Structures are given as C-alpha cells and as structure tokens.
Length: 191
Image (cartoon, one colour):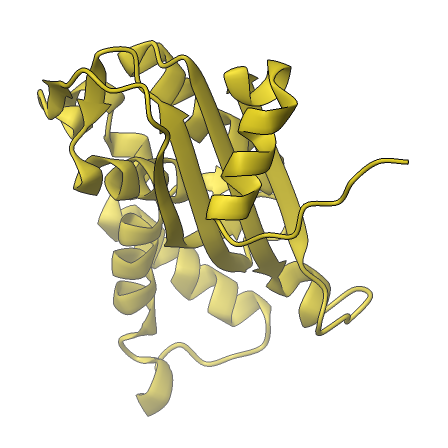
C-alpha cells in the first residue's frame, strides 16, 4: 500500500466533506487513517501458506476440534464500515491438526480485507478444508454490522449469522448437531 498516496486521498476527502485538514484536530488524521487502513487491510498482503508456516502437525484423532469465540473485526466492502463479532470453528481431522493460534490468525487474515460476512465464512472453511483435508469443517460467524446500525435502517440489536459446513458437518446431521452444541448454540429440531 502506498501510504503517502493514501494520506493525500484522505486529505482530499476531508476537504470534500467540508473540513479543514489543517486544523489542529485533523492535522495528523490523514497519516493516522493511512496507518489504520494499512492494518485493517493487511490481509491482502498475507497468504495462507506463509501464515500457516508449517504449523500443521500429525495427530491421529477423529474427534471434533473446536475453537470458539474468536473475535472478528472486518470492514464491509459496501460502505467500508466495520462489522464485528465472533467466529466459531470446528473440524474433524484426518491425521493432521492445526496449531491453535493459526486458526485465529487465519480468521484475521481473511477479515482484514474488504469483506462480506458470507464470503468471509466460506473462505475460512475452505482454507481449513484445503490445507489439512479434514473429514469435516464447520464455521459460524455471528456479527453486528455498523452499516446497518449507524446508517440505513439503523437497527441496533440485529445480528447476522452465517455458517459454512463442509464434509461430515454437511452430510451428517449428528455431527452438525454436535458442533452447534459444543459452540453453545441452540439446536432447533425440524418438524
């Protein structure tokens, strides 16, 4: 990212909305915003292989592994406003497991891009599936979107929930129910 160019664009934006970019409170805002956007979009400058960096380990287990309540902070690609919440990941390994911190880093890598929650959920699930060839993967994200809360319909208590279920999590209802139970979400029976 060209930080000095972004600073110039933010300075222009301040002028266009009727502000004085030279006033005391805004004098350093272009530099601060450029630095913030560099961090908030750092996922574009990361790749999965470097992120994982060999932190997959042989382990013979067929038990479900769950990491829940991973904080998620991202920017909506439609309005570039934040959405934030929790990501829950479950997978059934096939001889290979992730180092636990890599799952959180994986969430951050995809979240630190302009996103929609639906795509973010799928990207995380497929990255896990494609990296370790798990027997099943489940990813659920629950998030609040400021583009819906502070503008537009202005609904303060709404929560968007998305899920991606692959392999056994999709084909086996009992595996899916176990995942939902272990992440602490209600299981709704059909019928």
